[in-house]
Length: 404
Ligand SMILES: *Cc1c(COP(=O)(O)O)cnc(C)c1O
Image 1 (spheres, protein in one colour):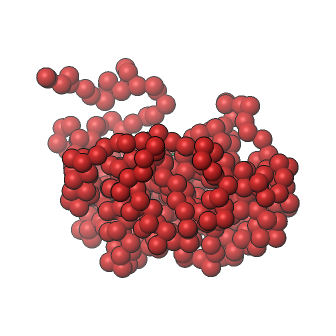
Image 2 (spheres, protein in one colour):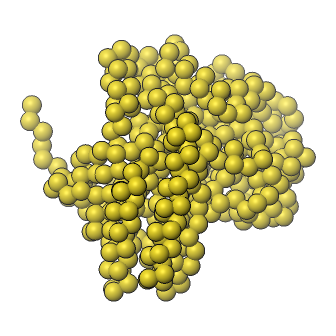
Image 3 (cartoon, helix red, strand yellow):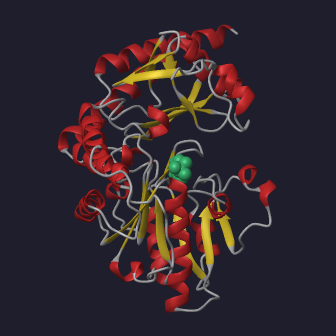
């Protein structure tokens, strides 16, 4: 059977037009390099939006997928399976959690977390205790509940009526959060570093303060670690960088190293509010996804990989500062581990996309986080030479934009 030729143009003809993909079509990746249909090579500073934590085609992940593919692909949750049990055991051993629900994406993990928080409050307190406090500019995914709790109205405004009882405080404003949290609050949902919202780390004391407010009002503290989890900040999960433990935590993105998988983690007590039939999924906990995630987690949760995030962070910060000294484009360079955001100087306001497009022309894949922030989220194991080469290409892209 022959395959029909497809190009970037085909996207405009047959896909629902809600993405604006790059002008080239990637066909192959290895480590932190990607090749397109024309054989052009790119350095990858995006890792599929913080997903390919171990780069492309990591031999151990390929082997785990291949091995499982020959055994059992799918069996449904009418049965359990060995890979998902191993994955859940690994997550329980490595975190605060006693219990794991495995699904297919970050949005689904957050949907489960929010439903669980509502049900837990109803089981232990009353139906009036249903309010959710979240933060402006937060991103929690694209289901209707997730865009409603997310703090970016552009993602929810056209889809009303939205679920109710949701309030937003400015991120890092503990006093504003305190004013919204009451005995009617069932959960506070927060990212330890806002990712899509501009790569904004929690201010010292902010997460600790939310923990205290949740304890005071019997509300559950939910950390959305979809982007910050699985090594991204140099800790296995970002909460481990703080003196705070959540009641529920969600994980996805790097968890499967590129294979779609998500997870919601919680304690025995909270998990008990999801009884048989309360919630469900057809694919969640699929053996293929679980086998790959288990292997990815095993490799990432080691001093070698987590420790390597630290020197790579330094390398990026030094390189970006040097570029900024020569071109004066950034007003701030910030982030945690290998989640790095560069805020554009007001002269370049709204032009983050121009920098990433110019990067593509120079052979670099990068990200943005809103209109004013260039974001880098490379593989955790990106080789030093690729960081150096990628930064050189980025500087050429910067020069292009600066020249106009
Ligand atoms: C990407 C992301 C999500 C959504 O994950 P999907 O897999 O796209 O559904 C949720 N929360 C955060 C913090 C994210 O970065």
